[in-house]
Image 1 (tube, one colour):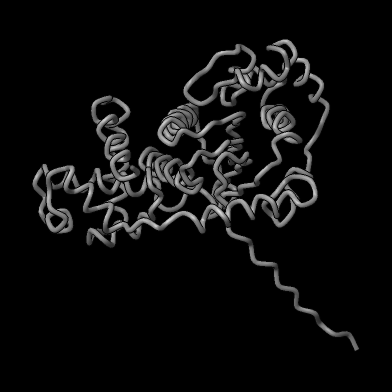
Image 2 (spheres, one colour):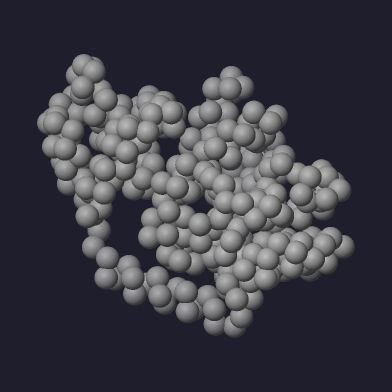
Length: 317
């Protein structure tokens, strides 16, 4: 008699925010659909990526936009990685749906985030990610692909997404880096960069335990901040009452303050959009649209951008 064995998949572990760690990020389109239909989409994503990098003080080493997914290698700051990705994905998703008259999710629910041992994998992953367009048959040479960080490394020039100087120094300059990339042209897909310890760590034996221990110690020392208290601080700074911000008051000053508070909470401090919308007695779509519009205005209004940065500094001090 043959017995049936039911095998359940192991639950995925929670993502880890480890300031200063190296994270290989992969974000896919839902059901593996294309997330970039044309260069307008790609340009919009790159612009938003640059803004989030600047706003969170995150460092990006390589990046590459593929038709249905994105690769990033990030050195996280003291800002949560979840906050970085939430801001980036929400902003681009709202743009994409408006641009293409779509509704619903653009990205798969969970992005993949692998913490990598810097000494062993930084340079290898810079090359591997920048060669993705070549392996996919999009171009013959990596520098011919506009939507990756390769050109910044080839030219040695800093842009809104990447500062290549740190990595180029490790090669003794651009020529050494170019030789390193050429040496990898024959390499194919490397599954070992994805099948990793505990689904979260790429490094030698015990690397994951060390990272987890450091994060656990930091969490024990860090007090939790009350969203209510933050809102009170922001409302006071913006010269509106907390009660007015939560009310149905649609006057210009109150609406502007409410939107700025929602932006700081969701895009800069990592609070969930649903949580913030519920607090203000609004639906998620309304709050998400207002936050997205404010973000777009900030990109063309340096004074508004500076004011939002001041608000973040106030609540984080």
